[in-house]
Length: 100
Image (cartoon, rainbow, N blue to C red; front, side, top):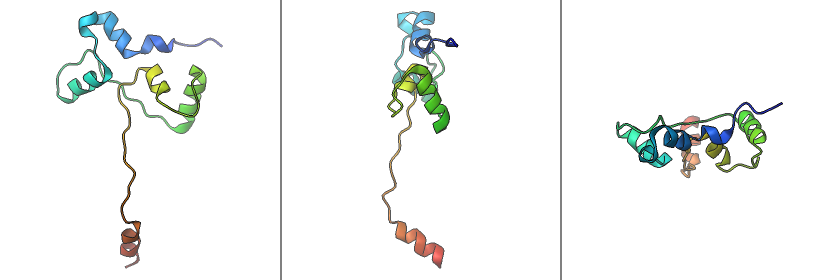
């Protein structure tokens, strides 16, 4: 079965550069900052979150490393990345409060 689309063709940077010329080319960071500041970006910033099963199938489809990394997000032209910090608080406080 052939591929439905070419991952390189969906990269939003490439599409916007073709549509707007080099003057309209923005990095993902610039595109997100413009949107957050209510300024007009060259195109709508893309976000993608998928469950593990879908993520694994997309990685296999594009021939990417199943272990992770942001290769899939790059292949899809996604502008955002998930950033988080692990909770390092005192879990004992919560368990004592619930016991009372």
